Length: 143
Length: 141
Image 1 (tube, one colour):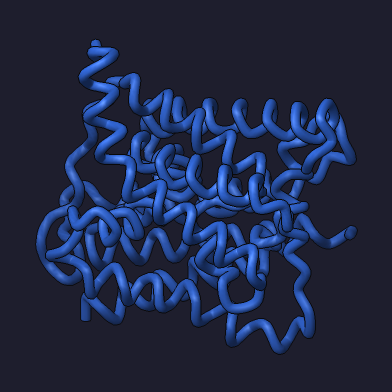
Image 2: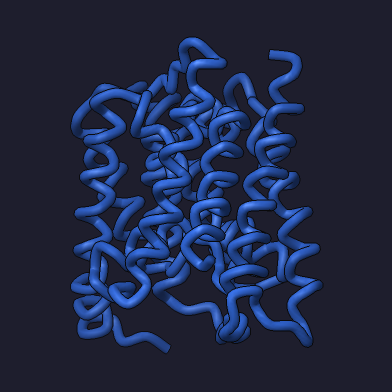
């Protein structure tokens, strides 16, 4: 059942990214570009996604996941150097291409060559991240 | 287009429902970068099948919906330097920050997570500045 639910969740995610237009890089860059012809769509996508998710979080206390196990522990709330630096790097890449990890995967079947090149570079970046983490800890000790 | 925001809202609700299913059924946070990244760096080896099933859904549904739309133009850049630099930054950045638009944005903000909110502020600011700089000042995107 765990695998079926994962497939359903992924399907809803992929369908949502597709119908919302979030795999269209011009809509993402159009939202980020406040000095251009501003496109508000992304704000509606974010707002729409947060509603069911906020309801889900309210159902968590006192329950267990359907397939068993436990819900994720509340995270360490501290804002770390890696959180800020990583998010800034991510934002720069997001602005450059108009793609983030979810839409880059959802659009592989129809986006063409450059979506595959982006995805390959993204996987390479993900593979390099552990080493970057170690290098950062050595050169700029956190906290 | 006029009704773009309606489809944005509909798509958003679908995305959030996907996140709700992943949380309430499997007890996991639906973060695209974490799901993919765990497969890349081996940290998610014990849950690899679950991750792959999730990604199969992400890829399959657009394939099924595509014929209803005829053609979808993603307006993606064909500048190799831009695409490769962007991919590397997105991959390394999201793993360093432990999340992207889905994990920090959708799942984090909806639980009022300080980390999710801070991450979202930084990636939106960086994204906005990048678009303004590379589009309006350099004219390369």
